[in-house]
Image (cartoon, rainbow, N blue to C red; front, side, top):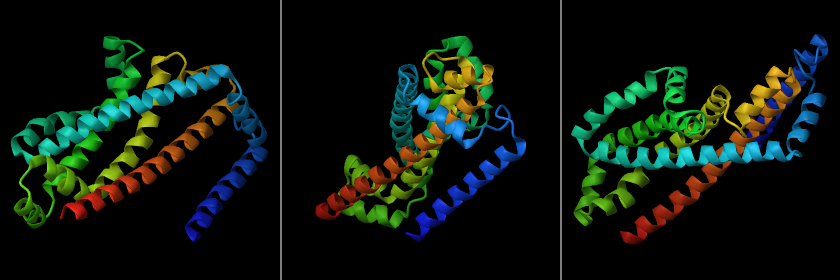
Length: 253
């Protein structure tokens, strides 16, 4: 409860600072007031084209997260269990983590066009995080715990399901939270740069060129809310999933 009060207090302080800044600047183009922003926010939620843009952007994010998680977890497990695969994939992952995002966006736009680029750029930014977390988590496991499990069951599938994944559960939860936050930011940036039709990024671009900065603030507020909802969903899902896996592990033992 106290943690929630501190969070609410922090939001309240930011809101007061926003009101003061808007009052002092007194220019809706430079610093839109909270009233203008909330009006634009509710306007976004009541227009069909805006709702379609939100739905399609969320769809792109979910698709990119799903495939990045699927490939990242699979290759991460293989890499964690096999040194040769780890050294084979490490340069690729390092390259993806170090190359500037804008460079990748431009290259993908040239090769694949504006439709597929948001999916690909989001996947390529999230995949290294998930892969590295899974690979490092398995590599750094206490070998004694793994050996104890192998004495009971030497099946690779059971080892992954009942030993490796439960033991690196905290790393998985952390990296999924990071991936969701990073994913929404990267996706919207890719949509903005590629001018993807029916997207949050394109809506932000149109608001900017029309000097409708209240809408820019409103879209930003919406993105923050989406990120918070995704974070809460992942927290609850990961907690329930870890509880189920743990109960199955104990029953197996």
